Length: 172
Image (cartoon, rainbow, N blue to C red; front, side, top):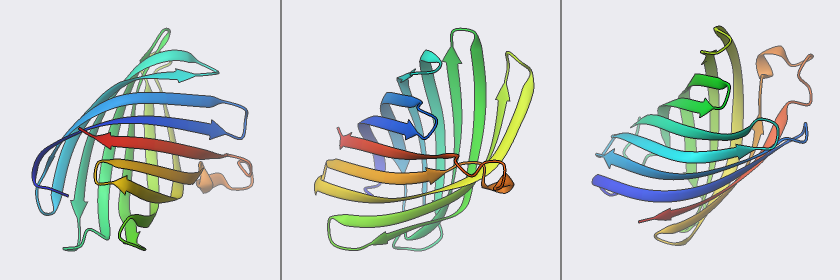
């Protein structure tokens, strides 16, 4: 990743097995160095269950190695919707991103999640993981496809809690 400021736009679509679909359009500004990055993403989301919302993410990442194969990250997602405002903390202590070819990489991101809903004044916690592949068509255009498993901490109660995500990103 180039050092300094990087700008990107993304369109993400998340399909969940409970027939909920979410689309998120966002713009991100990221400041990167050799091992660290910090960014902010703002965008609009539409969820077939909850409707429209505004999303603001704060993102932090630290690579453990020089090739950025193993690292950690923290995402703080603020969601502002009609009748619901929440902040979600997602910490990934050990992410892995393995280059397969010059344009393709495979990644695994296990994570812990804590979400506070300001409207209901309740916390919700969980753990999950996503596994995906990213293909870079050009240096500035990428496609990621991933599977995500939610709430693995309570596997028997949440056997069907999963989703498939498609993310298109463009560097600006």
